[in-house]
Length: 383
Image (tube, rainbow, N blue to C red; front, top):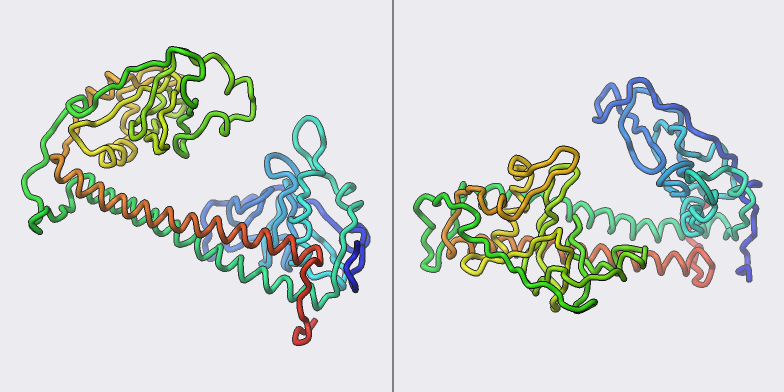
């Protein structure tokens, strides 16, 4: 049912789309005074140029590839590549930013072709019919939702800042450049000793004896996750898993094979015991602090490639990892360092939870405002 005062419009009757151009010849990664214009691909900024082929607010639509159908509003002079479509003309009855919100809510990725490389053409977009409120109401809805966008953007920046601060903190604390206070309030002293990691690592080598003995887990770059949620292919999550490594809560694992020489360490943060492929050794640190070593290993992981073997795929065995020598503090100082890094992680997690809540609030608000289920007052809004 069309809300009172709203009009159903065929998109092809109110906008004209155009494909972008090939990448500018002077494309570079960083913005400079001579190359100030952002260059957009199918979704995001891919670099900067001295040239622009758009100088007014537009709606950009990913045309091909992974970002096919992605919609975004751009309100600055820029260069649009041929991986995207953009609005060349928009009817005066339509606010550009509101149009972007409407198309994003509709989700144009549903209009992708059904085979081969993902692609979206102008024809199915033009055929869409969308209900539009009066222009004044479009402006008001856009203003309301922009408040959420600003809050989301601010929170994203706070997260980025907090992650950078933690990275700097790790650089100081995990190398001994900055020493913390002990239980007596005195700064830790004394040189860190050189150990082999094997002096601290203990392998946990229990294996499953029946199929589906515990939840199957996967160690990804984003953390340890349930395999049933990580893979969409049910055949992977339902295969025989007798003999998998058992990983109790608090224990650490890593994928011993890497295509790029990067090895990521994850801890089982779940409240339950899981199982994981034998490609993932399971280890713990009974005489050290687990959080300290988890941070230390991930910060140092890029250097571990030198201890791996293989050409196209690098393999870092647990024995090779244990043989690596490192300068490390005693357990008491490890615990103090871990407590500081844990506090930094908790701050980041709180911000991430806030960000997710803001996104969900905006999503719910869009559903109400862009369908007319909730109307806004426009008495004081100038079209």
